[in-house]
Amino acid sequence: MIINELLETENMSRYRLSKESGVPMTTITDICSGKADLDKCAAGTLFKIAKVLGITVDSILEESHKASVDYRCSFETFKSNTCHLVKDKGDLDFIIETLEADEIRKLYQRQWHREALYLLAMVDYLSRINGLPICTNYNDIRKQKLEKTYFPVGIIVSSVATGDDSIKEEAIANAIPEFMRFNIVESEVRNVC
Image (tube, rainbow, N blue to C red; front, side, top):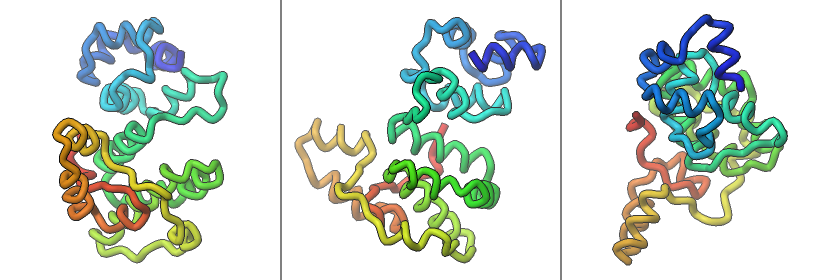
């Protein structure tokens, strides 16, 4: 597993990884021993570990799914990872690195449209609030829209639990325009832990 290899290379103990990442030692042990299912680990947990080790969450997940070349995490995990990257890198570095890597186009070509559109919406939103011009390389993708509206899991659960569809209507009304353009309901990209 990539985590064990990096610990060995960095001459870092599991205990030190636990202390520096803030992830409980039992969780680190379960992950390193293969006892924990990485798909069920919280995105924040994997992000904290990845940050200390200087790798991406995707590197950890891809390593655990070597048999699957096109490993695709859940959309909620993708959104969380993206928001964590923005928080960690800062708006400008996130925009620059995303555009330089052409990650939006790569995701779109893989037909991972939700992810591509979410990333494009994030770049456009951050560009707007930072007074930056919009990158025109993705104007063809900007013409696309998801067929159905994607709500955050919390909104869906609240709506179903209460039987109140006005929760969804309110979420749409409060959604960030750059995301809503693609039928993605997103109102908070900064509040990640």
